[in-house]
Image (cartoon, rainbow, N blue to C red; front, side):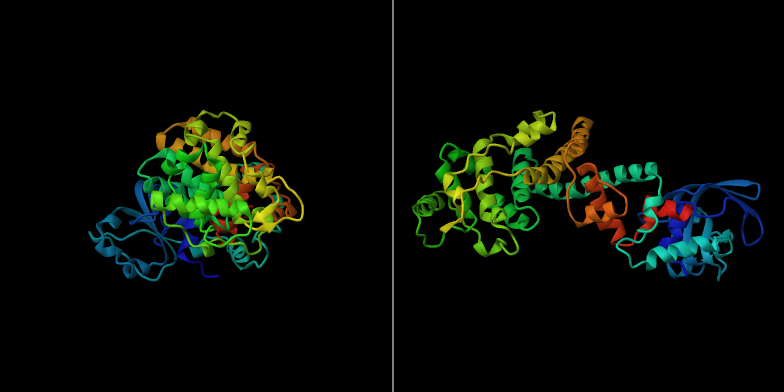
Length: 427
């Protein structure tokens, strides 16, 4: 195996090297006191490194290349930022390199010192065709490593989700109530109808809906009408009444409905049809005022859950799963536990985390983490896959971490960026 530059960076970062015995090409002993911090911006690969070469302690930057000649290929000789490099770490030395002042750059050639077993393990992880690369080794990793890594992954997961909230926050020009309204709306679409739900919330701002909270029929007419579901001809009295109200409200507020084809029904059970989710969302809007302000006052998972319990939904929907389409039996249309958990995991916790980070208030970021710890683990093929390998998710704190691990590390074969992968290589 001939390592790429990223692999060499990770070897250096995690010091997957022998503990001693390093020398420059000239034979001077090298002692790595601190490998430095990986730089993800322009400039040398590692900053703040401390390395003793011979009898001299050097502090500065380290540059990593596959071949020494890559220094010239990347035109580092033209960049003054590279004059502070104290060690050139390469896999293969094929060219003498000097700094802009003419001094020769010390070189550590890794192919002479890296253990062959380490390279073989890296090759095995990269070439593995299993569900995840380390599926035969992960069960042997100590619990402390797994727990600590899952904690870091959960933070990464929340930071990833808050990028979406930040986009909405900027769209709402810093209005927390409007940001949360659009976020909750998009979350009611779950994964399949997230985008049209967000479009609906942007087409139908809160200041319009707030005028009709005392008029459930008109509120539902607005939401179903803007979604594009009240343009057809109906047989039942109830959808005809909704349509009549919407025709008036559409003119009054100059509303342009969405196209109904945006909503996805394919491979969705009737209880999860977008029109049922829209009706449930109507119940939430009717029930709640200043929802974000209420969110900040809640202290435990029961309070967050209560936001979505007991929604007032017209009895028409107990016997219909679509306009004019009758159910075979009467049902309760309120949100079930799994749906509420989904909203807590994908909307409430990320919103608390984003607010806490932006406001510099750890109370809310910690509340986000506690909420996930107090919410049941998700159940899907990823969580089941890890369970089969001996890694159990006890709460949504764990399941969210494992989903992030699978999507952003395992699936992308980023074993050298993963604490579990590094532990395997060090064993």
